[in-house]
Image 1 (cartoon, rainbow, N blue to C red):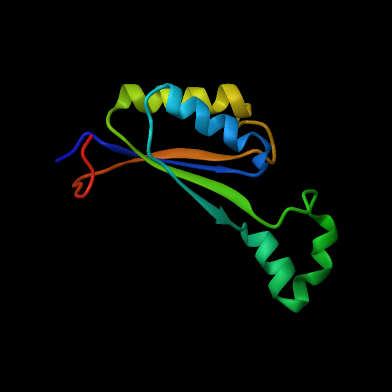
Image 2 (cartoon, helix red, strand yellow):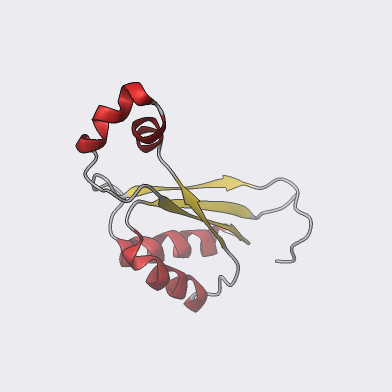
Length: 113
């Protein structure tokens, strides 16, 4: 059993992505994956003809968001990582910001922490 956590952070505006990644490196997190992701509303507006009229309702014309995922070795570093992201990016309690959460990792292979 591992104490490791999976940090998942989806941000809707990627202007500060590089600064967020630099902040994570500064606290000792040197591995993360960055993925392009689309929200369900954007997908429906772009791909399903009946919802195409809703495209004008979407404030941000950027069709993709960024997802940062990283395996974090313990709760202390996880809290520091989440605090660092919010310090740089801003509070996730604000609307149209994104979402950030963590999951416990039971078993882990292929990565030494």
